[in-house]
Length: 80
Image (tube, rainbow, N blue to C red; front, side, top):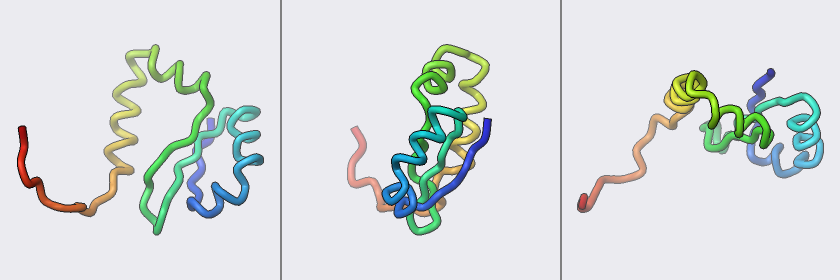
C-alpha cells in the first residue's frame, strides 16, 4: 500500500484520478495546505480495516502524531 502527499490544490484539480487511484490501488493520500498536512483520503475498505483491527490503531495514532501541525492556533479561553 502506497501513501502519497499532495497539495490541496492538486487534490481539487485531480480529484477523479486520485479517487480512482485510491479505489484501484488502495493508495492513501495525505493532503497538505501551505505545506502542512491536514487530511487523509483512503478507501472505505481501508478505513473499515483500520477501525476493525486493534493492531492498526497504534499505527494510525503514530501517523497522526507525526503529521500533526507544529503550530498553535490560539490559547484556551476556558476549559470545562
